[in-house]
Length: 186
Image (tube, rainbow, N blue to C red):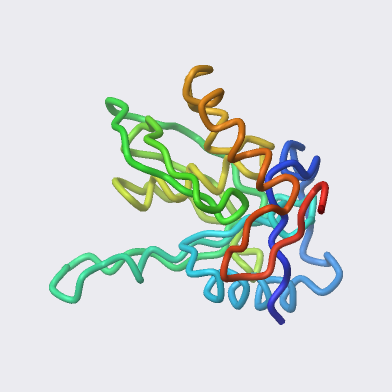
């Protein structure tokens, strides 16, 4: 089932999320709905707060970013109760966007390598290291479960320049091509 994505301005997007266990009600169904919602919105990642859930769960699929001739195939994974172990390397800028903040993109500086400990959808524990675009998407989605949005990484001046656009999203004065829920609908 395609769920509405919570837009900028919802308090759930600014909260640090709670861990869950394997008995979380309807977990497998929730994960399936998150995949369907993310693909419907043409996203490469989606975190539980973006669908109104205050839990430490996010999904990532960077396979769709890879060109056919790429040897690396990207990643398609579920991350539950994730904790970043380390971030390494010299920060690099890349233009990011977010399904909760449609029509806004900006350069965000992140480190190119991240090691993360997490559980998969079957509650098997993993510790993995990701590089490049995979690291960036994981870091972006991880930020969501800590209540951080990509615009929070911007300078005060850049954020101020976006204020009108952010307010339009909060009020629902936008029309993305996917289902959204607005914090203060018109």
